Amino acid sequence: MTALDAVDASSAGNAAVKTVLGEERFKMVQQAKLLVVGAGGIGCELLKNLVLTGFIDIEVVDLDTIDVSNLNRQFLFRRVHVDRPKSVVAAEAVKQFRPDAKILSHHGNVKDSEFGLEFVSKFDVVVNALDNLEARRHVNRLCLAAEKPLMEAGSTGHLGQVTVIKKGETECFECQAKPSQKVYPYCTIRSTPEKPVHCLTWAKNLFDLCFGPEDESNLLADLAAEMRQFQSQEKVDGEDVGKRIFKHLFEEDIKKQAQLEDLWSDSRPPPGPLSYEEAMKKTEQSSDAADKDKLETQKVPTVAGDAKGFVASVAKMYGERRDMIGQSSFSKDDPVSMDFVHCAANLRMQNYRISRLSRWDAQSIAGSIIPAVASTNAIVAGLEVVQLLHVLYAKAKKIEMKESQARTVWVRYPEPSRKKILQPSKLQPPNEDCFVCGSRTARVVVKSLKDFKIAAFAKACLQTQLGAHRPALYANGSCIFDPEYPEPGEEAEEEGLHPDWSLEQWGLTSGSLLQVEDEGQGWSINLALREEPDLDEQHYPSGVKVESGADAGEEAAKDMAEKKRKADADAAEATAAKKAALDASTVSLDD
Image (cartoon, rainbow, N blue to C red; front, top):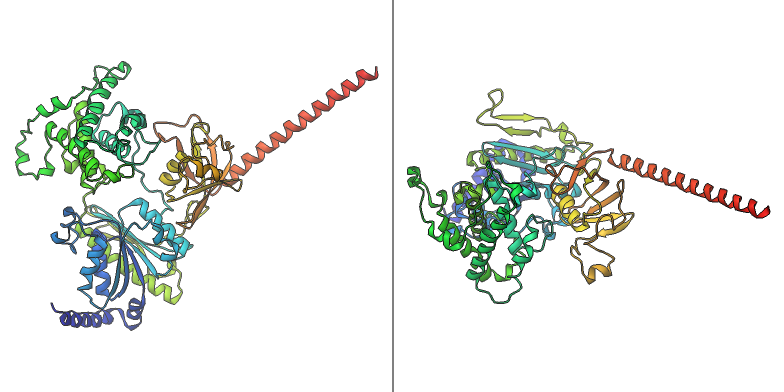
């Protein structure tokens, strides 16, 4: 198709859309300025739908680059595009549908400061096409702070959902609790794994320990000294380092674990150590006839293959990525980190007599992946554009969302309710107890104020559970944690900050009120702190539990008032006792 043909097609498309929407709505579409966040499965379909509907002023943000595995469902991409940024290629592709469209692409993380409040405020509507919970929380908070409507959508296999979020008018993304990632007890991950997911969790922690920044909350922090010794050496043989790490983890450490007799029984025998030399002899392939028709990534490798792959991935990190050691983090989409985690997990499974996994299965579990369905993504993207039209009309007519035609729409298949695959429902009002758009107050229960360091608290509670990006923490008006100083040092001390101090050292007690500020998200929250030594470690291995609630602040205030009342009473009693003693002393002198 020539450029002239494309222009003619756009004009014909405009005429058709104008006939369907009407002159007024089509004008709204042409004038709207949109931000699309995500250019993956839903994002590709969405961008195509937007330009064909007549939207011509769009900016798109996406962090990822194109992988071969994306090509079966993200139809804007071709093999020639592999390793290029998704946002850039998607923008180029949809411009072929509408050459007159102004589509600006950004290859970056929407959580970066450049995409903050000022950036979001310049758009009429933000349209999400994300598959990442943290990013969806972040965009939700940005839109609430900027008071911009947000089209929120997602899909899981055959299921999907589209809704509208508007500050003060509808539920926000965090008004209803989302399923949290399963957290496993420390002892299970460190010493007694029983399932492949336990070994994969161990391997992900191992990758971050070996190649990421220092993190005391890492489940394998006790191995830090041994793993870090290699990072301090300027020149190392990556293959030699890989073999030494192999020996330490899969042979020597396993021998130590096997000696912990109280952990083992007839039903749970101790793990078996595995040397590199022994592993390289295990070259037997699966005899399953079904494996013949599988892709290589869907076959379980030999133990020798896992050993070789583990050493090779370590060698790559110390070779090609030497400058990234100390700042890397696991990503299922990064081939090197995925190779490391897959092979390390399989070798640990070998130690503990657990059936090993193919790379395909390991990547699905490690990345918490439910296979995407292209048709679901297409339906969700189409519904998002329909709801977007309702939002723009309501915005132009100054109608509240609950009075507009905008709806939450669920995609349910293969078990539709009442024989309907699409199920619309009214937009729900904000949840008064929501700690993001409602009460902005939460109760936080910790197991120990004495043992919980403030930096670890910021990560486990503020970032992991509350979804803050760069939170600052205040007590009695003074800053006790600043994201600019996450680790102890001279600069932190000059600012009066001590990330290595415990909550108790900062003078916090059960009943203390704290304030959290995240300038990047334009979000704040009050925390009512409570110590509970009997907090169940099996359910809360991080040592912290968060509960939202509008009355949390009142309860904390009551606790503080009660403590003050008792303190005043004790002080009054002490004064009275002192006065009585003085009176008695005076009498004796008079005698």
